[in-house]
Amino acid sequence: MACQQEDLTVDIMNVPTSVFGDVESAFANDQRRLLVSDNPEILNESSFPGTTCTLWHDIVCSDEESVTHRLFGWHRNETGQPLQLGVTVQNLSTSTRIAIQHIHRDIHIDPLSNQMIQVGQCLAKSCLSRTLEHYTSVDQHADVTSTAMIESVRLDTNYFAGFIYEFTIERDSGAGEMEYAIRTVASRDVTADIRLIHSDPLTPYGTHPRGSWPYAEVHASMPAYIIGTERVYRVCARKKMNGEVASDFLFAASASELREGAVDNTGQFGTIYLVDIPLHNDTEEEAVVSIYVNPRGGAFAGAIFVDGKVSGVPLMKDNTNVCLIAKVVAPVGVRTFQCKLMTAGESNLPLGIYLK
Image 1 (tube, rainbow, N blue to C red):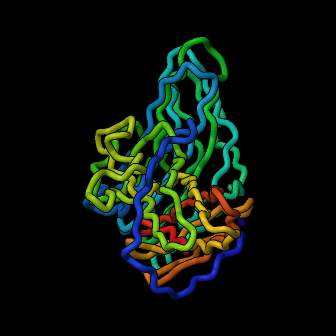
Image 2 (image 1 turned 180 degrees about the vertical axis):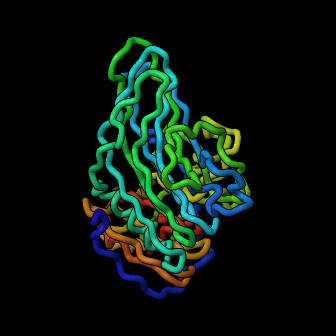
């Protein structure tokens, strides 16, 4: 399996609520495009009234030789019948042939009775550790004005699908710009040719995220931590403690390159989140700092990268739970602690990073 990384241990702790801190600054840290397809999460007669549909899409026009992508999907079949679910790439160019290369993916299809957050954690671990499985597209090229299929799966009723794909679209021939549309699609006919589905996306339902952003990684800096104090930094929040928009709220619907039908990705699902925390030691000797993650919005799970190792953050049910992610020696002066994290599907945000 792609997600065999060991999990951290969940402990019980009384985390103070009087020492919250907001993210100081954040910026997009890469050029990999992110497509999030999590709305409608529940596919039923109301949200999916037709026989076929586009769940979400990304439309790209580029004069580069290649474009990298990450696709995060999360959908539940409650239609009462099996569905065919898939990912396609439509070449919109009349002059340039494109190739679908370097595919790595992890996909899980499980009964709704299972804990969905465990699937989300597995996806986060495999993506953050770069252990996604190599996969060859069903169609490796898309000729001009044609549509290629990357993969399709059967999704039985009362099952859900969680998946991450990473791949590259490359210019194969032709001198013009690459123009193409990536779609997550569904059909009530499990034998249908889903390459023919070119419709607009379904109407969004509720607050589950979807959108298409030109970046898939965030680099966030926290205010300095002072040795000898306690601090809880709130990451992946919609707003700061004073009500202003959070500095790391970079995956808003308004920032999606396709805004119509997009929904805020506050939890930053499908993204890699890089954290910098300056540690200020103004004492006369080195000190040890304990660093934990702590859910601040409800149940949380995911993955964390610290000191060259990826570990799973298992289910923490509420804000009385913590996971120790590092014990750091802070020399006299200033050093910076850095980690990366990914949020599991079905998690609730924000997440606290607790130092003491």
